[in-house]
Image (cartoon, rainbow over all chains, first blue to last red; front, side, top):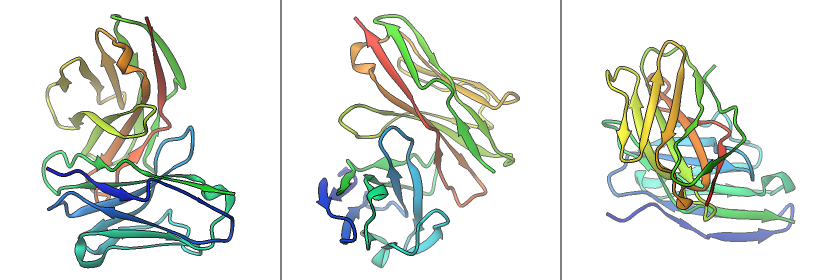
Length: 114
Length: 115
């Protein structure tokens, strides 16, 4: 089966600019996650979708970050305006709702804010 | 609050030796799942092993085994016969069943395998 697709792989922007990341989960996976991973740290959950509804966005900086999952499939994560501290890898993952619910991750989108 | 602790920022192991990576967790949920992921320098997160809180047996997957001690809230990963390709970051993660299946990760342990 095809894996989790993410784009772009790399993005360099200046502070106060905007950026958007796209994720296409594994077909049939109802749950989609966006994580932020700062260099040297573990992934931090930003937002979790169940189909096209948000089930957790408690750690999403809502003044600058937004995310949507239209039709319960693809998802977009946007940052506007970006800050220096947003430099990180943004990981998208998806999982089923049965069994161990193992998360399958995409390759990540590395953001550098100058 | 749910939390994962990995107290070993960095570990070294000789090739072909076994190594244990520590993980402790904190949750009030009676039912939860525990995971280990590997992240090589290339950046992808690779699933290694899963343990359910009510599983009677410790999980094993090839050279990976999970030393699950529920009363101590620990879920240590044991890698047997280390290989050079095992050099990577290792993350312990937990999914409390009642928290909308939110998965939280620990800070990670960097493992270096020495030839």
